[in-house]
Length: 102
Image 1 (tube, rainbow, N blue to C red):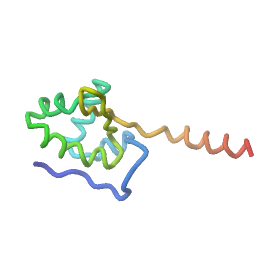
Image 2: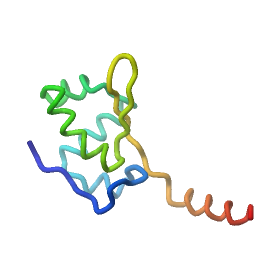
Image 3: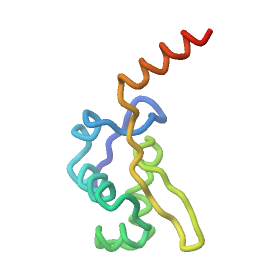
């Protein structure tokens, strides 16, 4: 199919706007499409991409591996949700709060 973006780290804390803009157009479109729906089944994604479920899973795999999508399961099958990175100020605030508790 088409090429996927590889990131230096094996896992991130989610995707932020800068990383989203760096993704290839097909991945950026897919992330935005899933985000607009909150969560999507593997079948929904396959139908949206006009591919079979196995091909859709191969397309989703690097996005899950990079931590941009979260895969979860229920009795109906696999579902995917966009995982957003915490805002930078939130991390700093949490660090300061943690230090002040000591």
